[in-house]
Structures are given as structure tokens and as C-alpha cells.
Amino acid sequence: MAAFADCARTLDAPAFAFHTSEFMTTARALYKRLGYRRAPAFDIDVNVHYRIDAPRPWTALGYLKFLSTAHAA
Image 1 (tube, rainbow, N blue to C red):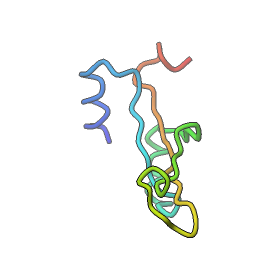
Image 2: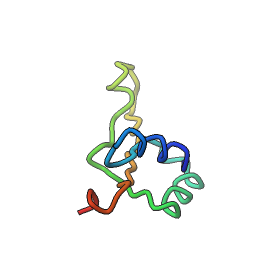
Image 3: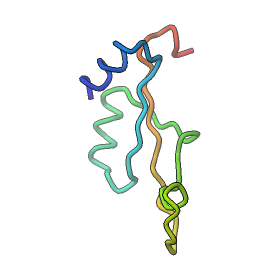
Image 4: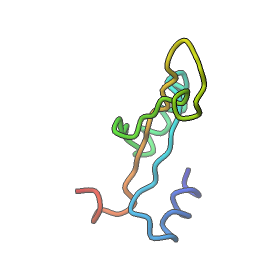
């Protein structure tokens, strides 16, 4: 995760964001410990996104970490 954030910083990105799945509870706990926060505004239904006909939604959960304090406000 640090390498991804460092790469984003070299590109002057204000934040690093990604998606994960709800069932990945251990990974989600790690992300929280690393300072990443849930960003529900960036959640997506993977089935809709990829035009998959499925009986129920599959939500990809958005996570976000601002890379500088100037952007965190």
C-alpha cells in the first residue's frame, strides 16, 4: 500500500483511492490501520459496471486516503 501511495505522490495526486469487497474483512481492518477511510460516494456495483446479469448486486467498497494535509480538509 505504501508503494502505491508513493507512486500517487510522485504523480502529485491529492489522494489514493481503491476498491475492495465487503467479505475481505481482514484486509479492510488493515486499510483502516493504515489510515484509509471508507468513501461510500465511490462505491460501485461491479455487476452494473461490467454489465453482468446477476441476481444480486456486488458492491465494490471505495476507500480513500489523502496524501497531504492540504487536501484533507
